[in-house]
Length: 171
Length: 392
Image 1: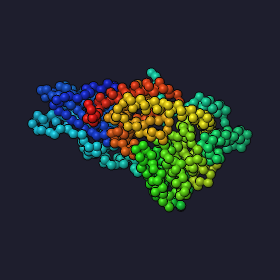
Image 2: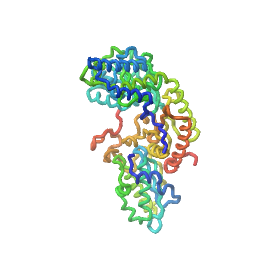
Image 3: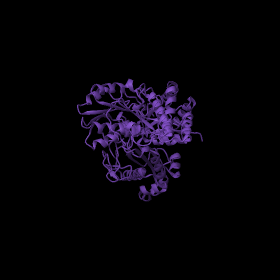
Image 4: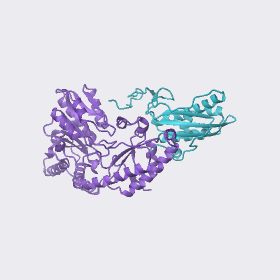
């Protein structure tokens, strides 16, 4: 088995799955081209995350990351939640396979985006309705990440210069 | 906990008769078939008997047209690199398809770095190549056409007899990677008109680590391995006689049982496809409805990701495989599935179900109910299902 017991537990029994209607903040990152997509919903009361829910399309690791992230963030103040990093999530899961580390990027990115959405709404900035991203658009930056060593690579790259792995069949 | 193997495309169990043949070969402690004393000659006789048995499976004219190898990968490397090196002065162009196994793709990539050029043809939505496109791609420089018989990710069969005829008419050699079809469906090298055929024992319940390469008499090819004069000078190295005798036992059984095996497997496949259509919405079946292996189904289940489906099915006691790139180290979707025209998201949601001789109709029914449950769970988590589902 490629995943440890903590990861498998969160994959098998994901915490905080679902949608919060009338959410105070929504963050959505990823695209299926890189393998996963994640949406985070926040309910905020007195500058504290009272409730958090997620929806994820992705591999076992992406689902476990989403679940762990919501557990870490729930009950935290906005300022505390802003300090949650990808590394915190990966460490709480007691490690992920190297080629799955990018999944943890996705989790914290989605949370930070949801917090920014909340703050923008609070400041009275009207944000357009979230729309499905075009498949080739990368909402967590304009790069893809090498699945082997996690360095950024160009979207069409067929070879990772950093770790010398081929990334995609070249015809 | 019980485990039902629905991943026979990755590995088939050894049949009891094959095990017995291999154990007998080990206990007999065969000598080196190249030795000239009586124990060597006894080993050579066993080897040649095995070669004749394997030759019958593919209907080769002469058993000497069969070379035993370490498996499908070696056979493919030998066919492609051996033909390219031996015929380079005639031309340096090779025609293939976008859906070949990595053994073919990477052998060709190696040749490209040595100055060969490759034309790779696209396929239709079920993964079939158009023979007319092969005819168009052949140039006076072309020395080889390599098109796989059965695709390992979709099960779709290519019209290789037509393609072989086109290659022959243009005096170009034709190789087919038939690793997933020889011993599974009828395969007659003479009827097809192939010059080179790669195949492997495990596809027909023989051991892994042993395979064959059919080289039609008269084909100009260099060995991949240089050394001794084994295998009629085509493959150096002392023969893996235990494996080869296992392969021969499996070949004999496969030839005898081919029709009944196909009937059993096709019935399970039909049952599964029927249940899949009835039980789960928004599924794309990638396997060709007619021209496909009897035991394999590739299905893209929309809005879920293949590795998650595979892991949850494992928890339910079923082994399937996924070509979703996530499971194979690369996070990119499979080149085969993208070649069919699937979107990345749909390609990621693809599972591969392959039935085997020991599976039953009851296995299929239980699997369908587990699959339905797993897909419902994962779609409940998926943001794509909520947004894309047209009704509710």
